[in-house]
Amino acid sequence: MTTSRSGAVQAPQGSQPWLHQEGREIQPFDSVRQFPLGLTHDARLYSCQRLNQILADTQILYALYKKHHWLMRGATFYQLHLLLDKHAGEQIKLIDEIAERIQTLGGIAVGDPRHVAEITRIPRPPNGCEEVPAMLSRLLEAHEMILIDAHDAATRTMELGDDGTNDFIVSDLIRTNELQAWFLAEHLVDTPLVRA
Ligand SMILES: [Fe+2]
Image (cartoon, rainbow, N blue to C red; front, side, top):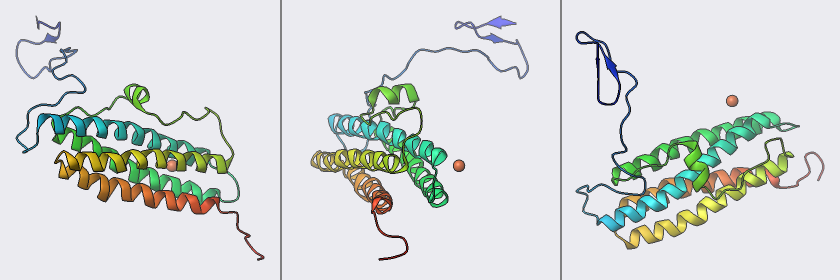
């Protein structure tokens, strides 16, 4: 048996994996590598910063959707239980696309949930259960925070020449959040169920 510089233990021959390895950080968060994309370093760094804010907020929105999917109750339990899970699934797709856009630009996507919690601006819900309309209202407000940020980020990234980020934010992020906000908002209309 031999020991590597980092203390990992390896068998001298055969197929024994190197285990318990440790390494140094090779790219800090909030930096971008030089990629040949026809975009300046500053434009790519700016896009990554804006996208990481949206990524952190979207990860929290996804978590809120799952929390409320689980805690849902009442007469509309079934449809809301299913709807919130559908929205969660669409948000998790966006999370991957935002993160991979950041990586495409040479940056580092925020991934660890404890790091996400440090970055997000979406208010933390109670650990327990709120009334159903309050849950839906909380989700709507999270959508609007993301949408306000996304509209501004779309404009600013386009001004810096990052058309790909602008297109993603407008075509995928904004449209998905707008549609989900509509579906939630319709559940907060106080309309008679049987008699007009
Ligand atoms: Fe579920």
